[in-house]
Length: 232
Image (cartoon, rainbow, N blue to C red; front, side, top):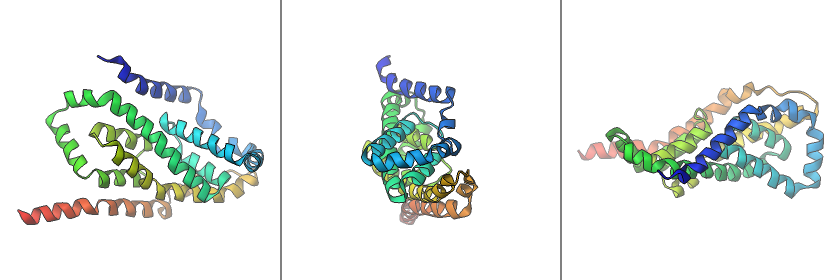
């Protein structure tokens, strides 16, 4: 057994374990950011490019190590950077981070899965890859699926790196800009020293548009199935 192939996935696992142990999520809460919101805004104004690089590095790291709370990151970045800047930064950073974990899982586990896969898994892989773009867009658009899960599943299904990157990049755009736009409004509350109410994230106004886009992404699959059944 080639142990080297498991090193990347092991590193990511250790990183996640350390983040949970040190409770890093508390450091990224609105309560913590609210205390230093003014200083952060001043630093961003004075060191804009450096701030973007740091924010991007933090987001890439968070996604790579599958840290919980990606939606909180999006809201925080939206409150600090504004909708357009934060949204663009997150889309690129999240795609890079997602690609890291996808490649780590693909490199470490793909051969093992292929060797041990039963007929049902092989059939599922074939079906998934016949409509990989539609399935990936659906998984990215539906907010019900954890981001790290959607980074791992394509690796198990044998999705190509090209399809993974393109569908991740375009698939996360709608949800990202929804969250950062909400975050940009939250900035006003943080300036007043108030803690925002995050219940709006689960409201129909946020969920339904994303669900509608997800359903549309499956139209090509439905059309192919209907067309195929008519030929029989």
